[in-house]
Image 1 (cartoon, rainbow, N blue to C red):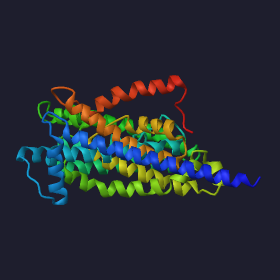
Image 2 (cartoon, rainbow, N blue to C red; image 1 turned 30 degrees about the horizontal axis):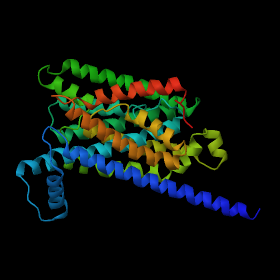
Image 3 (cartoon, helix red, strand yellow; image 1 turned 45 degrees about the horizontal axis):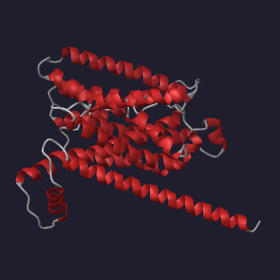
Image 4 (tube, rainbow, N blue to C red; image 1 turned 90 degrees about the vertical axis):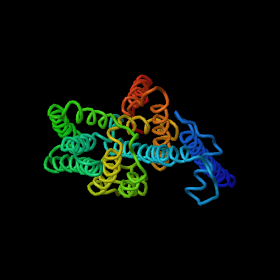
Length: 351
């Protein structure tokens, strides 16, 4: 009997070391993928030149490289890589949070209308001929406003299940916002405004700058903070409201906080890159297959996998053909078959 505590302690140390090793391996893989994305493209950059550029511009080390190489790395590829990492991680974390809150594996970050609201805001900005910054601001405010409307409906209709009410309200509000987007597309100039609207709704990182990333990063960090700090309570929220309250979790307070955080990161991401679907739906499932349903591990895994996934998709989008493919098309082409496989294998469930 005296050996049992020692065996249990040894098993716990082994599990901790395995988790640390897995985290280090995932971080190294993400770093290597980022270096590959910076070096590969229509204008290949040798690793030596890439190291010189990054060392000189980021760390002040002495180095000299041709001006075109520095322009390609610092003004074209580095903003895309940083944006892909940030947006992929944010959408994946939001998707994992929504799936746990609503106890539904089919839930994605746009279930409450945030993507449709951001889309309507951006389309309105393009229709009015506004500059890029106001368009992004309208997209951000549109996403937040849509979720506020959905949650207002949920508070008004108290006699139903709150989770089901929010989902149904999100579907209804999203349909109305989608009708508004369609109306503006019909009214838009077919030669100038309509192509810009269509391209934005399909999602792209082609025009992202480091300034854009810096503008939305504080909002993303603010939204991610409660998701990461309260991720252990997500395990209780996924059990249901009555069970969670019996275990000491005040669901009426925790659910709005988590929804607000997930909505904030989603609206910030969509305002910068346009609508990129399937990431928040598929990546949490992949993370769940790898690390299990415990949100203490699931949420960090979703962050890492989402960042790597979108970075890989963006790399394919800009190198696979002579023209750049919108990200929304590629994520659908990859995500839909994978999701069908999940359904066929009987794995499409939370927990």
